[in-house]
Amino acid sequence: MRRLTARLLLVLGGLLLGLVMVEAVFRLAGPNVPLDLTMARFQAYHPVYGFFHQPGVSGWVRTDEFTSFVKFNTQGLRGPEVAIPKPAGTFRALVLGDSVVEGAQVGEDRKSLALNLEFRAPDRTLTDEEVAERRQAIKAKLDEIGGTLRE
Image (cartoon, rainbow, N blue to C red; front, side, top):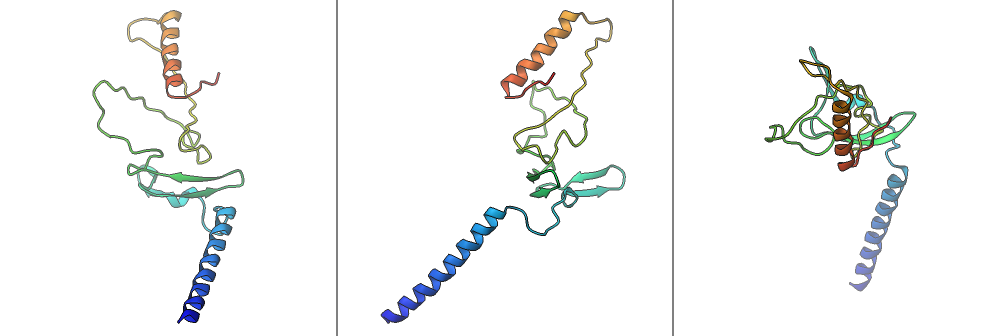
């Protein structure tokens, strides 16, 4: 009985060692396995509106320039889950951009935005002081959330 137990432990130990070695190889190699690692597999086509991210999917993206892990929440957006109903006192801005807004090479916790802001009043021309005040408010909010303003 003791001999059988020893052999069984040796077999289990060998299997465990093999699994640990395979895991180590995959962790060292990262996502560099021969799979489709393009953004196309994360997108769904709509005949009128074009391509959208599939909600709730995640995986690796690899190009000649970078390899990155991307994850989309249940609304098909990158980043954490967000409440769709707008809480009272919350202002939202529509940001239009290209792949730089959510480029796969930009980490989930970072966003790279290129904005062109126009400050206008419907009934008059804004003064330099009014525009500077609003620009400072934007910069203060960026500083508060850990953002930076490139000039």
